Structures are given as structure tokens and as C-alpha cells.
Image (cartoon, rainbow over all chains, first blue to last red):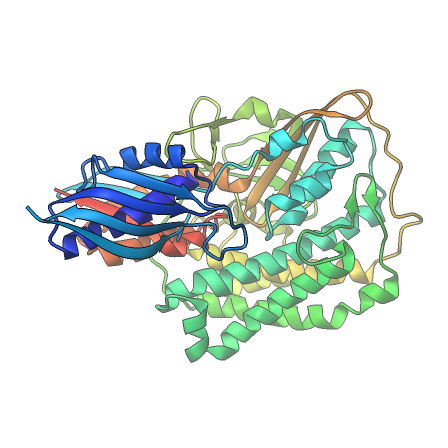
Length: 87
Length: 429
């Protein structure tokens, strides 16, 4: 459920960035999962499929890398590094 | 078709552990749903296999605001099972420690979380800019509560001095006397708090569900009592499970409690006050009357006034205990484990807190159940939100969000600080 809150925030940002760019579809999403984010890449992909349903990012490829630095100030979050879009 | 890569480096994080969805069809409310994202914490599972002496320290970690409540319900359950009744000086010291927790918790909620709602500020920080004296008064109250917890409990957050059978060490009379002057100042501040909050503008909102709280003859129940309800229940702690049940709904990680067979109930300050206002200290009763409160109060928005009245009572009660204090002969009674099931309750600042432990003959915990007040109040909060939304469908989303946040904070749930960032989705058709 903690993950759901993260996904909600993440999807909001993806949609905002895509809309600002005039995108019609998001084709790829690259994220870095913090060491304390409660995610594994597989787990994240499952959540992403659910959270992106009905959005511009539905069906997008997901590149998720798990960080291992517990001292990183962003360790509890998920960093959205980039998205690829179609205009 | 053009493809582009957009670099964002955006950090997604949890800004609030609560979210709410409202679906409206014109002015008609189709659906209201409050979701709590707080991750499961598995404390009941942690307790299995541990010694019967460990729950006061383990369960205190459940909450940084009300650890004494967890410690008290835990020792109540285990001591009752093991046939130990602590001597009166020990019980009163526990009550004093608990009063310290009520003071710090209520001061935090009244001043830092709830009052800004009524005065049109987004936070206590903003409030402090225009009303520094009020915020300083709240901080001073909270500090006094923390001081009580530090002296009796060993430290202000997650105290370490409570044990099954009593305490690890107890203060001298001289040490306790050092709290008198700060508590007298805190009592004055609490009285001022009642006058301050009673002057707020209150939307009308009557809670019509069953009210549930502990009661105890001749005292305002805090660390012990029988479970009573406005509909007539009068139960020993061991009868709790026969009358209340927890259900799980997919949208929330917090289990939700209801009366067996269905039925919403509310615990916390409104319930305590409505069932036992006559047991408040004379000064607290006088303050309540001057604030316009009757013998019972079912007005959710006026819970801030009731909480302020309880601040007066907690200060008064602390001073009474200190004045009469005689240090116990020894800090703790010996407790030998007994196989069976023990039940313990107490009144956390937010309401009834129930613990149940099953032990084997050598004192190993086989099973534990903990029911905090927030999960008991969640259905009542949702009912209230449904009603508030139905009455205010013409508000724009921002105004509706602010009103929903305030409504949630009326109940001081453990998610109340998180819900300053309530994620509200409104679907209008």
C-alpha cells in the first residue's frame, strides 16, 4: 500500500510531463528504485501495469534499476529518470 | 510521429499516507472511500515467540505519540492473566505517566494540527506568524507533558521504564515535586486553551453512532476501567472480542472495527466525555461549562474543545497524584507467567486501545492481538466524510479537500498529520 502511494505520485508526474510535451503516448519509463523504497524491479513492474492502466503510459516499457545505497537521501523514494514519448 | 526522450530526475515520494476518492453524480454522492496506505507493520506477528516481559517495550514502538498507551494496555493484559494487581502507588505513577502522554498528545493535536483548520491557516507554522503567543502556549504545554514522561518513563518518546509488574525504578517525592510548578503553569495554559478553542466557529456535525469508552467509578478512566457504550454495553476487557470485530477492506491497510453483526462506533474524547464528563476534575468541569459544553458532546468539530478540557483534567490529575505521592516500597511486583489468555485496555489519547495475549506456561507469547483506536474509528470517519461531502457538493475541489481534511482531523486519527496532504480525487458527472 505504501507502494501504491509512490505509484500515484509517479504516475501524476509522468502524465504531467507527457502532457506538457504534447505527447500522445508514453513508450518507455526509466526509474531508479531507492534501497528503502519497498520495491524490487519485478514488483515495480506489476504495480506499474496496474497504475498505468487507462493512462498515456499504458503498455510502456519499464526500465527499473534497484539502488543499494541505504544512505542516499532519496533511498525511500523512486526517481523517475526519463520517459520516452510519442507526439 | 516523433519520438522524444524527456529527462526528469523527479523523486516520487509518499506525501501523505491517506487518499480519498469521491464520486459525484450531480449533487448526489455515489461513493466515498478513505484509503490508508500506512504499510502493514506486523507487530502482532513480532510478538509471537517472545517473552511475556517484552510487550511493554516492543509495543511502545508502534506509536511515537502514544507509546504509554501501548505499554499500559500490554501490562494490564499480562498482569491480569498472571494474577498480579500492582500496589496503588504504582498504579498512580502509571496514571501520572499516562497523563503526561495525554498532555503532549492533545497539545500537539489541538495546536499544531487542528486549530489551524479553524483559523484559516495551512499549518501551525503559518499560524505562528500571526499568533505566536498561542503557538508558544501549545509548545509549552507539550513540553510539560514530555517532562512528565521523561521523569516517570525515562524519556519522552518510547519510554523505557515500564515493566510487567511495575517500573524499573520509581522517582522520589522530591523529584516529582519538581514537576509541580510547570504543571501549574500548564494547567493555566490548558484553561486558556479551552477559552481559545471555544471561540472558534464550528460547522455543525452531530455524531449519531454508538460511543464507546472506558469508565471507572469516581475517576475519569485513563489507565483502567470497564468498556461501556452509549447504547448500554458494560463489559469487562475479556468480553471485548465477543462484541467487537475487525474486518479487512481492500482499500485500507488498517483493519476496521465494528460492532459484531454490523454497527459503527466511535471512541476517543467525544465518547469519553459523553459517557463520563461527571468524573472530570471540578476545574475541568467548570471549564467545560464555560465553554458551552453540556454533559455530553456529540459534535465532531467541537472535539477540539473536549480535547482542551481533557488537557485541563490531565494537568489537574497530575498535580493531584504528585501531591499525594508516597514512593512504593519496591518499584515492581514479581510476576510469574501463567498459561492462558490475558486482556488489557486503556484510553489512549485517541480512544480505546485493546490488547490480548495468549501465553504458554513458561511465559512465551503464542498469540497477540492489538486493536488501536484509529482502526476502531475509521468507519465512523468514513460515515462522517460521506455526510460532509453530501452537504457540500457545490464546493470546488480545493475547498472540498480542505473541509474533508478538517473532518478527518476532528477524530485525531494516527494518520492525521499525513492527511494534511490528503490526496483527494473527485469524479463529477
